[in-house]
Image 1 (tube, rainbow, N blue to C red):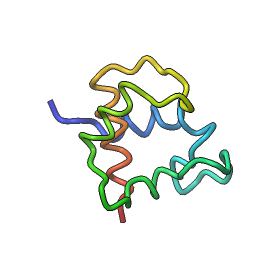
Image 2 (cartoon, one colour):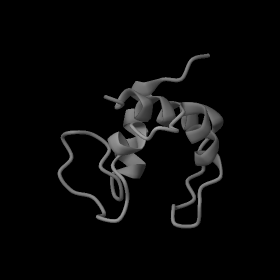
Image 3 (tube, helix red, strand yellow):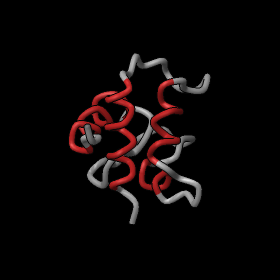
Image 4 (spheres, rainbow, N blue to C red):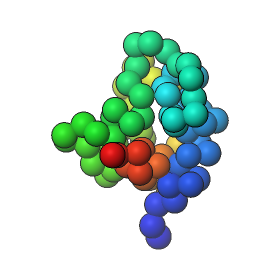
Amino acid sequence: MAADADHGAELAKRWCATCHVVDSDQKRASADVLPFATIARAPDFSPEKLAFFLLDPHPKMPNFPLSRAEAADLAAYIASLRK
């Protein structure tokens, strides 16, 4: 089953927008974290690598109980921001 970027956008707005700028309509977020579009444009970005990272987040990230499908959906959404 393919990842659902639209569902990933919903998850991002619900869980990630407090810290990250998750879409172009958002005006504010934490100053010390990267916007999703910046993450998507990183030279070593890959949706698969990001989905794996989201399943075991680093200490600065809250521990969201994401399923594998939700992590893949979030990664697909972030990948869609690559321009």
